[in-house]
Image (cartoon, helix red, strand yellow):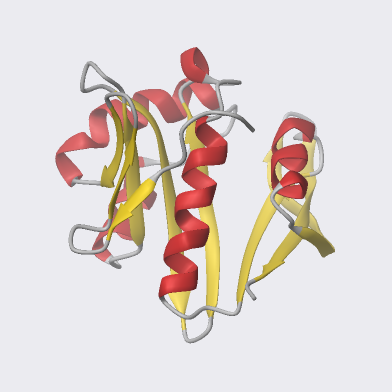
Length: 167
């Protein structure tokens, strides 16, 4: 994808997106805006408890801030030993299809590499073709299927398990 790439500042672990956009560590005070985006973006959104638990567990949590200081997207990743797991990447519906999911994912991959992870894993809804296209364009490979993983309007939906080998 074209456009500015994030530059990682090793001291603050923030990424700058020029001009005027930034990826910064998430703070609990941002949860009201994040919850609003989550509710508008997903039919089965994460709860406030899930977000708080992720922050309490010190997962890697990031917000993409627009030029006005508003949150345009966010991402969560857990890391253990040599494995990273993308838990959530969400872009505000008003900012989708602008490359921000790509920028957030690229940021997470750089962080996983810096933490010496050897693989990054994630699950994606079988019906979420745009996300699958993004992940495949970044080099993720399909590893398997988790049956009935996600809640759905008519019961449950399968998740595709994708992996990215860090070289």
